[in-house]
Length: 248
Image (cartoon, rainbow, N blue to C red):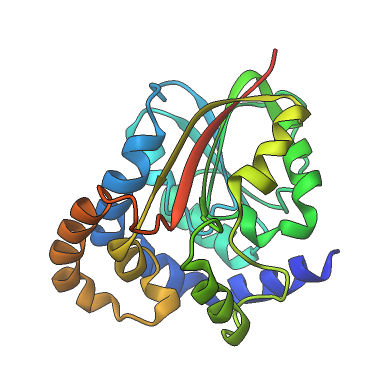
């Protein structure tokens, strides 16, 4: 097994319960509903068989279920898999997304929220595997931290000094790193950039060590500021969302 995968498995096993409690909360869900999910999911998900990949405890699964999808999860962490099953009473498989046991053409859609930048050394295998297990015409939804912004210099420093991150983790350039993979058998359906103050304070609160109890007070003002600031081109956009379709 790849060393970075082993390191991350240990990390996510250790963080599983805390991560679940911190990001399944009301305020994280409110943030993701407004700023991530609304611009990302334009299509109806009703009746779709969706893989919540790199799912952790299923922070996105509740949303997918509410939209009418039939959801299963996959994650490398045993603790996350156990927590996912307990929380959602849905199947969840312990596997790395770069090499799963799913059959060809299994899913109507695959969703990865903030996971691809954790598997950069295995990105080629990961994209090929996603293509393999998607049905023809299936949709690949993803959200990733944006490398193509001046604030990424701060993020790179943060990744270096924070022991939770491995040496090969960093934000992703959509244009330079991910878009070239379209030739593997995808076409781009949508691409959006977003994320500033509320993304940092609410969306990354556990990583930054912001206590969960403070999110109740921080979310109204940070949401308001994010709505305003996102209208100004000079304000950095800290993440991107995209939808790809598997070619028939």
